[in-house]
Amino acid sequence: MEANAVYDPVLDADERLTLHSAPEIVAVLRSLQKRRSMINVSFDQGREFILTVILAVNPRNGEILFDLGADARTNKMLLQATRLLVVGYEDRIKVQFATGVAQATMHEGHPALRVPIPGALLRVQRRDFYRLQLPMGKQIKAYVQPSAEQAERLFEVRIMDLSCGGLAMILAGTDVPLEIGQVYPACSVNLPGVGTVSAPLEISYLSDIPLTNGTTERRAGGRFVKLPGPMQSMIQRYINQAERERHLLGR
Image (cartoon, rainbow, N blue to C red):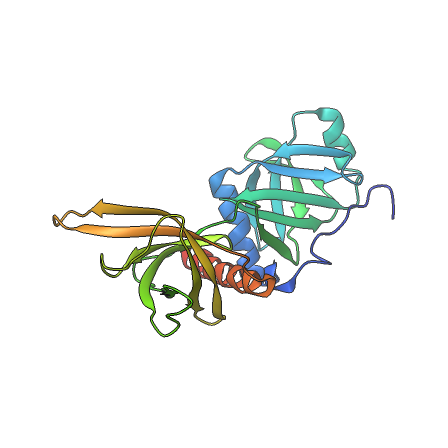
């Protein structure tokens, strides 16, 4: 590997976590720009880096414009690198890609850096699990089995948010017999376009939320217990799918 090369995270990544569609990649980059997310651009096998922000994303010219780093020496070294590794966070999703040679340019009368828009971009959740907030109009239901002896008795709940670690839910009625600390043998969730995941669920909280109409709504949260790896991948795939749709609608 040449001295200025860096590991390209996309080459060995799970394809289900990788974006290849140009409109989707541009949407993610523009989200980072809008949020003024801090971006780490590293080179020389990670030994050198700058912290910056995205100033502009120009798909017509196939370029991303970055602000200069704080250190003039490092900026000069970066311009001599042949490959750059770019890492940022969109909410709590890690965005990572490799790109080619940076060039000096100007943006709104100030010095800036110009790099090519990548052909692939990796989005992975952090260890604390990114939670997908589900809009009210997009209802996903889960079915909780109360005990091993009651395999045919399932309680229906509506999911509020979902992650590879667990879920938050609205109980259809106050008679759903959930208890904090209790592990229920199965919680099944049908993810549209992906499939069904099922694992034991440990309840971590219960709460009665007052509503504006004077009634209350019971909510609960729980964590999956020993969720199999393939099912974690299914949830991650569904989260990626939902986030792609959100980005495209928000362009």
